Length: 116
Image (cartoon, rainbow, N blue to C red):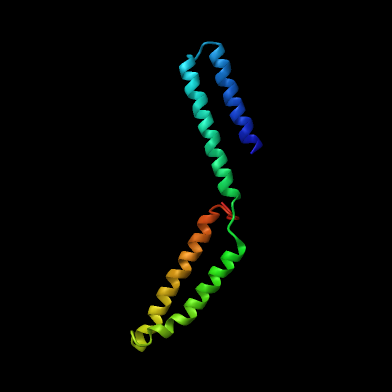
């Protein structure tokens, strides 16, 4: 983050120098400074999102409930589906829920430890 702050300071200094040399009008320089301020706000929001993690006990609790659901759900399907469709129905529904849980974990830390 020090490099980003240095870069922003260099951009602001460049705008200020150009304004004193009358390359930009004061209105143009004001808009550029305003844009730099907005970039700084967006950078702080990104840093906050990257540093925010989920609560560990919440994740453990959610996964435990999901495993319990996947284990007990076939018993609720016994009267609804025949024996031939019971296993595919259970697998597809469990796959959907487990996939949604995996996707939510990946969206929380999209760049994680992946090798690019």
